[in-house]
Every structure is written in C-alpha cells, then in structure tokens.
Image (tube, rainbow, N blue to C red):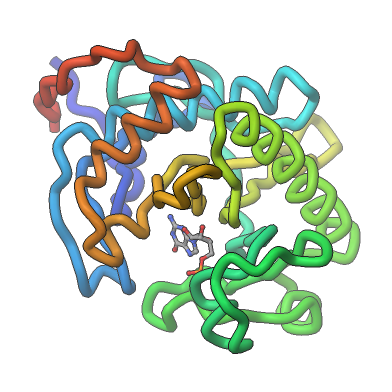
Length: 253
Ligand code: 5GP
C-alpha cells in the first residue's frame, strides 16, 4: 500500500496530500488542546464528531452560496478538501461577550453585542495568536483591502447561517472562529472558508439552561466533551440519537 504524504500536523488535524492535484485529505484527531496546548487530552470520538459536524456546516454554507474548501467526506475521520493558501488570520465573530474579549474589556460573559463584533488574530502559536488590527494586516501584507472586504462579508454570512441553524435547535451561537483560504480559478483569485467549523471553534450555549456545548467544557473542566459535542450533533440530526461510540480507525502512516 502506498504511503500518503503528510503535509502538516496541527493540534487537532493532520493534512495529507489528496488523490488529485489541488486536493487535500483532512484527518480529524481525537486530541483536545487548550491554552496554546498547555492543557491537552485525548477525547474518544471527538475527531469523528468534528468531521461530521464540519461537513454538515460546510455543505450548508456551500448550498447557500458561501464558498468553502469542503469537497466530500471520505470516512468517519477524513474529508477531502480543496487545497488553498491559508490567510494567516483567525477571523472571530462575536454575538455575545465571552472568552478573551470579555476578559480584555471587562464585559460580563453572555452580554449581547449591539451588533456582531469581528476581530482578527495573527495565526502564530508561538505568539499565542495575538489580536491585530486592519492596520497591521495591511502594513504586513497579510491580506489586501479587497481581501478584507471579502473576509468581512464571508464572516458575517457564516455568522447569519450558523446563528439561524443553531437557534433552530435551541442553541445560542455566542462566537466562533473561521479561517479563510485563497484559491485561484484561472486568472482570478477567490476567498473561501477553510479549516473547520465545529464545537472546537465555536461557543455554543443551550438557550434554556445555558449549558455549554463547546470546547469550553474541556478548557474549564465542565464535564464530558464528547457528550457535549454529541448533543450538538444529535440536535442537528447529524448523528442518530442512539449513536454508539465510534471505533477508532488505524492511521495508515
Ligand atoms: P476567544 O478569543 O474568546 O478565546 O475565542 C473566540 C472564539 O474563537 C471561540 O469560539 C474560540 O473557540 C474560537 N477560537 C479562538 N482561537 C482559536 C483557536 O486557536 N482554535 C480554535 N479551534 N478556536 C479558536
């Protein structure tokens, strides 16, 4: 059996060269990390849940005309995605105060924002993904003015889609992070939603009880992370209600 070429290994995913030029296989690991990998654990089933949930969100976005890198799911842990140049920014959209913004600005967690607040962080683990302004982004050439307009529009469209989807199943979309990739179609370049959208990269609170259904369960030791993600998947109809824990496939590498 031919050995696949590993392109990149991050904290939660591994990227392998895809079967066709311009494609990549994205493998979702069970590893959970927080606080820039100072806290880590292996959560059985997390990779499979995030693979399914990210597929569900990206397919939905594609179907309403928000372009994403998602092509197809290959198996329980892997999906085929379009290769793209990742813009080195984490694009964060906040509907309610939480996490680092609540702390930084002294706002109580859960306070609704008067309008969605978009923040940019420079993707650099060694620096702890620092918050940057559009001035930094322009000055250091990470993205052009036109890119920034397109990124903002993509981020707000993702926010509307995800907020509505979650509201429909009794969940509040507090905030989320996306990453944006650049692809070339002939002479033209386009920006697309890349990486993943999952409870690892969103804050999701149950509307009735306030129960957290996202990675804060792990960050703040609030219970079983796989249970929380399974609840999100169950409500969205992504997993059958009585799904049994998935068996871990062997990594061929
Ligand atoms: P905060 O800045 O409050 O830590 O995070 C804001 C939102 O972006 C949260 O939903 C959080 O999960 C997401 N986020 C921020 N940084 C990262 C990151 O490095 N990885 C992932 N998966 N999500 C992030």
